[in-house]
Amino acid sequence: MSFSEEESVEVGFTGQSKLESFLFSCELSSKVPFYTFQEDEDEDLEHLLELRTICLGEGVKEESNVVEVTAMNHQGKTISVPIANLHIKCLPMVSLGEFELRAPVTIRLKAGTGPVVVSGLHLIASQVEDSDNSEEDEDEDDDDDKEELPAIKPAKKKQSH
Image (cartoon, rainbow, N blue to C red; front, side):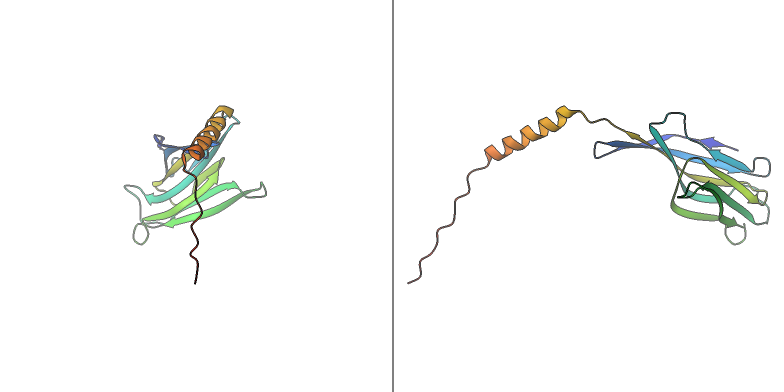
């Protein structure tokens, strides 16, 4: 199994949270039939796995390769769901779009011998503390803008004869 993570994007949302994005990839085969994506010990971070593609690797046999994901549902119960059934002759790759799961997630080669490559993004969301000074500065800037605008005069009314 191969696993790689590289930093790709860092984005700030409304000054309250920060989202970092890293490349994710793992290879499943009969030798290594599963991979578990887990979060770090740091409680302030939320780890998400956004699966994008699943494709057959080099040297795959003519057989069905079923990939299954095990994660928690909205009630906190662990469930397993098959997400791809690949075959070299008819469906060598599937695009999942932005299939996002909260850690922990286990990706398993349920049937077949692979290799099957699963790729996507490892997203890490963290809270960013706002300083009170930045809000005060914005308020002062708003006041300055109001003072610079000229006074609006009412339009003169035309008198009808």
